[in-house]
Image (cartoon, rainbow, N blue to C red):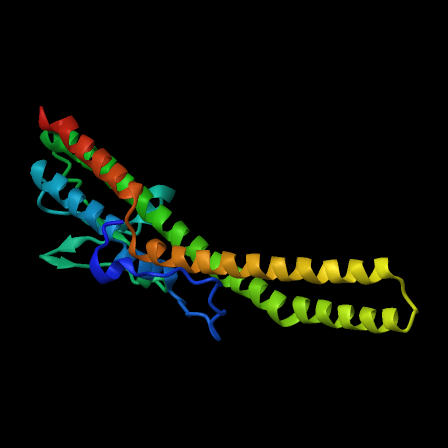
Length: 234
């Protein structure tokens, strides 16, 4: 593990930590991921480098990742050195990608190579949105399930077992009924522990979904580099 000295004296806790009293609220989880995902920012820098290597310097318009993949464009034209764009209600969710379309025949192949890389970046941005949204939904849902087991299911099973014990002591029910109720209580405790484990796993997966890393970034960098090389020899 690469540890030495005092760091070797570590201990693994014998139980899971308690559920937090309140969840971390992330109302704009997608926007946060688009701004903070390291692999997405690296892919965008690679796209900028691709544009420079193809000698594409003046963007003619700007579109978002969703517009590229859906085929719908909201153009942001450059006029007299000023950028003009139409502001929408979801502007904070946009991941803007510059587009180069000079209309010059000699630049056509470079522009097509750039568009291929831009589409790969747009696809990655959409995947980042999906990963962040799914991670947060898992974080919330597993918390609700774990809390339900803790607050409702286990206490209910405990009361049922207590009542079963009373009826058994009063010779109203038999041993098998008492054992069945006790077994159901034990099962509810095990399910509660599993639900708590699922929550903490979901909580651990939330940060990577927002801040990024992993194999996806390497794949995008390779594809963007390939897009640049496809026109580099021409």
